[in-house]
Length: 69
Image (cartoon, rainbow, N blue to C red; front, side):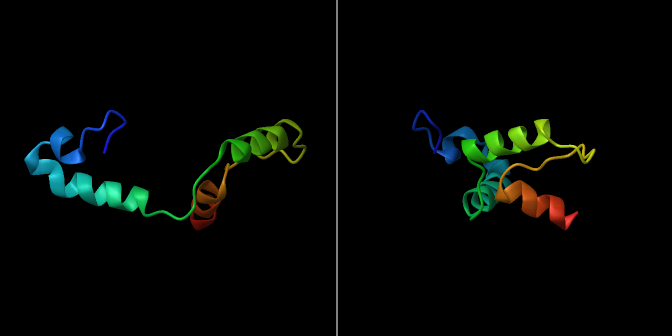
């Protein structure tokens, strides 16, 4: 359901419904999500970083993805 109350079925044309539903199920089924404080802490850490890193994943979902690569 979208922010205005419209269902996904109303927003996505029928030929794409299977893929849209699959993608949305994947997104909403995640257990790890980023929060505002995750971003703030990561930015603070990046500003004060002296290691030379150029990538700073923010939040448990981004950290998990970065470790998987």
